Every structure is written in C-alpha cells, then in structure tokens.
Length: 181
Image 1: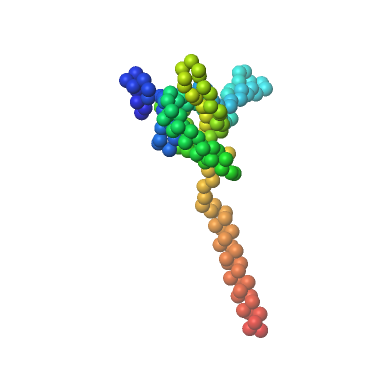
Image 2: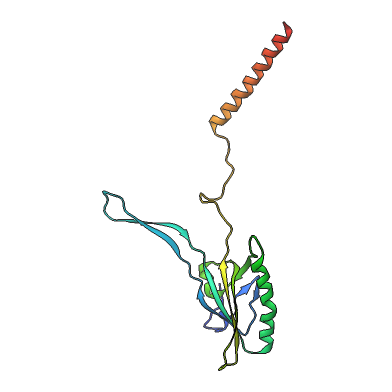
C-alpha cells in the first residue's frame, strides 16, 4: 500500500524507475496514466437489448514534467537523461524499466519504456528549469488464446500409437518369415 498523501504531501512527487526515484526537485505527472479498455456493444437480431464485450486493455502512457529548482538538481537530471535516451534507442526492443508511481498504483502499471524526451524549458518567473519525459507501458506479449500449455495425449492418440507399434511388430515378423523361406 502506498504512503498516505495526507500525512506526506510530497509522496506523489517522485515516481521510481528500477526502485530509484526520478531525479529533480519535483516530478509532476502532466497527463496520462489512465487505464482504459476497448469495448464493443453487440446486438443480435431478434433479441431485445445489447451486451458489452471487452476486446482489449489499452496500454497506458504517462508524461511527467521534471522541475529543477537549482543547479545540482538540474545537473542530476542532465546526467540521467542520456541513460534514458540510450534505453530508448535500443533496438529492436527498447529497455524496459520496473516502474512505481504511488498515484497510479491502482492502475497496476509495473513496467515502462521511454517513449519521448522533450527539450529543456526555463520559467523566467520562477527561475526553474524543466524537461518533459513520456513513458509507455510495457508488458510481455501473451498469445491471444492465453499462454500455450503442453497438453497430454488424448485416448485416441494413445490408441493410434499402440496400433502403430503393433503394426511395426507384425511387419518385422513378416520380414523374418520371408527371410526364413
């Protein structure tokens, strides 16, 4: 269970990648993190009403603005961004990071890849520097029918194997008889 933001208001300010807080003075989620489903309303001819079927769960994207109030915070983010860029450029599949954001814990987003890294912005009024970064949810692929599992042989397959073995034995006996003539 996440820490209570009533007791600690800054608990939502530092989501983690690989259990390490994202650097910066403050990390603000600007958009994303929603969990949505693709659903389809179906109606059959001759029946009253419709029913809903869930087709697939959409992958979430999350955009953060990383604020830096001073030079040490900005230097920490500047040192961190090249690692994020290198992870983003890895092909064919970008590096996936374990992810935790207490504000999004209920949506069960556990792994992300870097989708977008923005440029630095300077707020002249506050003197803060900020940079935006977008993460896309990453999940292992699962076959549509669920994960494949080995199945045992059916009774028919077992019977066919028995008959094939008996047939081979009879062919061997016939071949031995022909040699004996």
